Image (cartoon, rainbow, N blue to C red; front, side, top):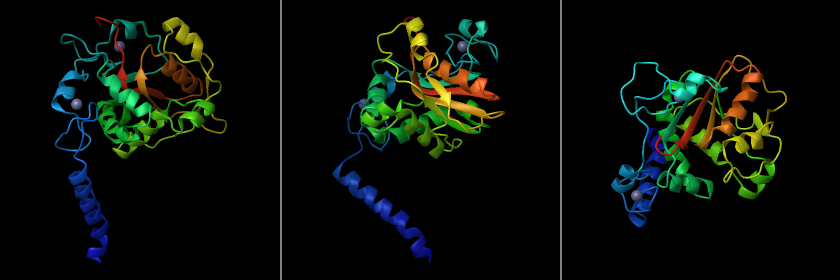
Length: 249
Ligand SMILES: [Zn+2]
Ligand SMILES: [Zn+2]
């Protein structure tokens, strides 16, 4: 009995050892050989900018100097966002872009490690949340891309001890042109009205965390948060892997 219970674990260990013997673990970002799976090499680790406190209590923007507990940044002080709190693992720059683009274009094996990082960085907003809501792709894009990277991250966050995932509660009603070259105002216009709550789903009084891979201007998560808020969500958090900062910011 005991043997039967431990057999799968033993087989996994043996399988892991066999895979490691043939294919030593690789750095998630650059592919250099590393000592353990799901890790970055020393160079990539020090090149990435991981966000650390002190930071804005609301949006998680790191402050360059110590601030009193609960301090918020200038943007958050204006209080225009529809979400309550946001956190991200790292700055979106040329280094973290390798991970973001990798996950988007077929390196689905990255999701577990990145999701575990997000679980840690987002602890403050995930603890006590009812559901994780990934930013959806339009169904035509899902067909051509086969998976939604935000959905993969959401499931990985759950697997790392986060709340359950509501993969299809938010829907993308129309296909929006790529945001890549658009400025902040154009991005906001681009996604206005693009999302909706799936009919029959009820978010009233629920604590929700929107998950996406990157936050650039925030137009997409703002639009998602607006929908969830309008439908009665009690709390809307935002958790992304990476977040762009203004140059010099
Ligand atoms: Zn590396
Ligand atoms: Zn802020």
